[in-house]
Length: 406
Image (tube, rainbow, N blue to C red; front, side, top):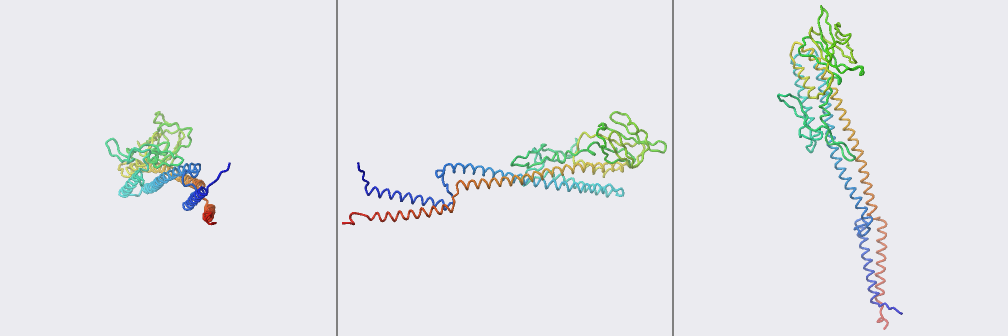
């Protein structure tokens, strides 16, 4: 059986092939113009699917980077506020040291008290500071737009924390945008952290003590104590009593008083100074609660303004106690600042890691859909040359006809 292919059919097939080559050349030209090998999913379904997944991961990383940047900005502002708080505490301590000068007049001490009031207000303003978005920086887990409120009510005065204790935990790509201000400024250990020494305002002498310390934790009873001063003949004596049990401490009954003497008992130690009057006393209270930095400063202000017969001893005791508690408060601020600095370092590390991952994903996307320009140009030139040759050949064949032989 013999098959004959007509000349018209051959011409149609040739024209079809020429059109297909022109289409391929146009597509290659479009790839070169866009720099993409895969312009639509049908060009390479597998590469298109993998590229879409990679783009989704890139989008999530970009969102995480924006969230991390926002968290870091708030945390930087919080760290800056903590630094300012520390500087204010240093100024307060300098004023307390100068206030202990025994040559100062009442007017000079009143001036220091006014300066302390201003610094206390500045501390309160720092604790209520907000970030650029109006979010409080030290409100903990939220609860109030103004977390620290200075109240003056019949039930009491002082600063009250109205936020929620605690703070968000840092995640792999997020950082806390607020800190627990209650833990920073409102949980200052009283006295030396183990016990508190106070001088009643009813004392008429100048006796006072240092902050005291624990020298043997295993011997500490946790009881309260009282030091009573009594003039026996011409000699001032003291008696140390366990106020919890009501029993005098052995070896500390009717002991002659000497200014600067160190008193050691039940794992505790303190140094007494000044000149007591008969009937004066000093109380030692085992700490079971905490105070706050605002109360510490306010107590110092009240001591500077106190006017009474035994003001010297009372003022010396309260100012010494305030400096001890101020040191503890400053340590808590430094601890919070160090934690914020650690989180900022973590933010830098996370940012570098996520940026590297973004670069890796972009490289993967380029490998999947981008065209190799050198190979693409070479293929384009080959296709263009082949098309030109095919067109010229078709033109020559098209002129062949039996009529040219007649």
